Length: 278
Image (tube, rainbow, N blue to C red):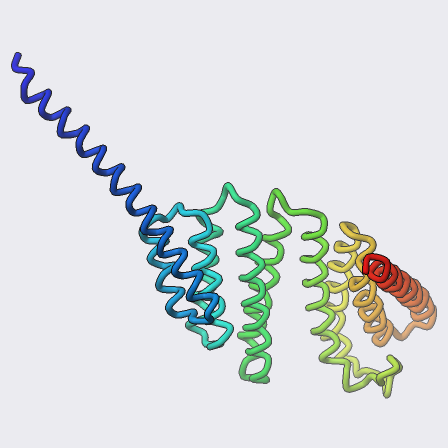
């Protein structure tokens, strides 16, 4: 048996492996250089140039730590400047890539989901500014906003603090939906100018119940979350506005007073802690 061709093949394969490994090392060094150049451009506020450098780093070394995150954050900055549907989708896609490829890093996934939620929230508000024309689109974006927040809370490494913040954000958005319907009927001191019409009350009711559901979830994870108690108080007011039974109104007022008292206590504690720390 002629072993010479076999030996030559093995040598060739070995050389190929060394060369491939060498290319990998070179690409990683080039990627780090691009990453550093991207950071410099980012710090100068030159986001388009920074994006090009970060994209180059990702292409050269997809597993380079933070390369995709820096790229996504730069695309987000461009979106925040441009506020176009195209720039929003590019930012959403950049963060989705991090979510898809960072299963072993819950912290990165959480950060990416947080930015996606922020984008959907801004898209919702942008659509709402169009009035009736943007109503359907706003509802679609609001749904996505809630889904992304729920995904944050569902991450295995999600802390109680994160869960409380997520459920507070969702609860607040539902309260906001109700408030937008009722505000023309309510005085600044939270008394009614006039009874809210039955059809408007029917529109408000599902949002109020959802708001209270999520706000109570937030309090399960952080009972000392002052902002939650404040929005819960306001949501309870909304419920009282559309309640006609006097006994139920009295019961709601007791809940309102308790939520208000708790919120004030927590704000005072926060103020005292800040003064002591300072």
